[in-house]
Length: 323
Image 1: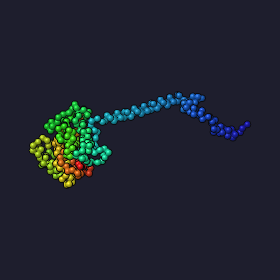
Image 2: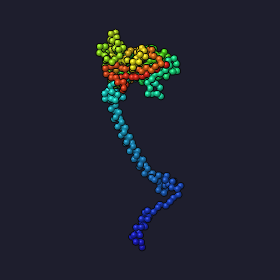
Image 3: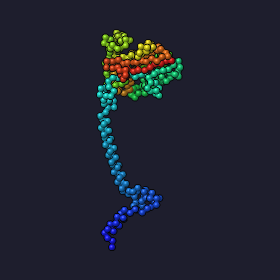
Image 4: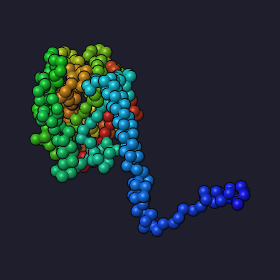
């Protein structure tokens, strides 16, 4: 008769004994289905059904909670009005100035407009780039909602609520597609555009007697002429383009602005109306000196537009080189 100690040893050996080895082919088959225990991958059909039902309910409830949270979040947003505007937004209240055409995308950091005036293939990139940029201004249907709510605005005729002002670039000769934007004559047109800031209202320089000292003399003279002959056009964000350095100022030559020397005030404030397009100013460099790089700085002028050359606030810089 075995003693208690021997029984304990037998029980220990039985508990920790190795399971009988099975052929590998049979072991792999039993991983998928075990006919003796009627299990699939180690679980019975009922067990798999319970797990499937649990995770279906779990992820369904989780998805519903996420959907409810997103629905509540979107109820706080307006599709047209930003939640944060002006000083409370990242953009702030000082609009930037942009120019077109831009250099090729493979040289994105460059601001140099360089071509040979008599070679079509050489200036083709610049005119094609302008064609693409101005397409939405020429064909209303390219901008959703624009065709049905365009309004012919004027200084004494601002757009009604929900309508947008037209920007008719077809008459801005010589800065037109038909004229190659005057690139073939070595007198290129550069288009300026003020960045959009929702709800921003410009404070105009509309008195020739109250203009900043650093405003170019030619622009001061222009504003004085407008004040005398076309007083109703004084509510304008004025524009100036000059050479950055004395040498650039000598080489830049005469500069003309189309249709007027600034962005008309009736385009503001920007309220994200359907079909809205930013106003443009075409800057025509009539006789820039050839064969030399000309550094050009254009500025927008309003009381609440501040200029910072380093940060490019209220201004834009580019270089012009015509061989």
